Image 1 (cartoon, rainbow, N blue to C red):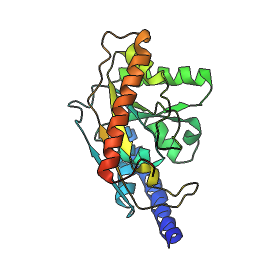
Image 2 (cartoon, rainbow, N blue to C red):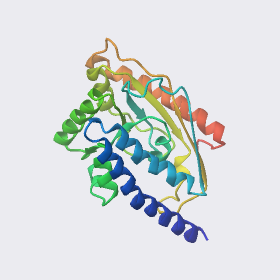
Image 3 (cartoon, rainbow, N blue to C red):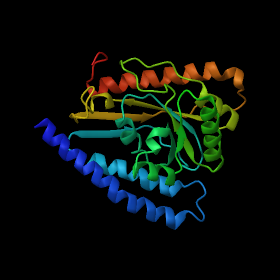
Length: 250
């Protein structure tokens, strides 16, 4: 039954993506001439993730926290990373953020096309030139008054402990003169069976935390800022695990 239900959910997911291409394309065409930051095309793309969750009977996702007053005041948002389902969960926040994502995902037909229309940012992990280009593109999005979202762990943690945070997001925020917006995620690790594509019943939650200003900071402050934000996310993540009834060892 798990395989049958998962097969149905995958069918619905693919259908949402294929039909969503028409929706995102229509929004892109209608707004491309004046929306340089592709804010509205990006929002249309995130709507597909929200729709997929609503159509998935196994997933229950929630968000909370102090939402930004003005979605066009850009932030460098950073979040811990538990699974692919983080993308679906964080997309529920009601403002646009451009995702820093592996370039391989951009090569997936339909999905990759919409990511390009949304103006998300590709990255080849481990290649210095790609990292430099990706950060330059992130600065471009921030200059166009659109937030960017980065997973500073760089990859999904295989345990319940956070991986070390990388410097890139924090250097970007300091150099661009924008605040860091921490986001804590919990519960998405359980959305899929380990080492498989079988969907599992799961409740997950994302909490946005108060922004962390970068005014007056320099590159010399990156390590302190990084560890401060990591600690805030870790505390909030553990609180969410307790609220969801998930043990740290789960």
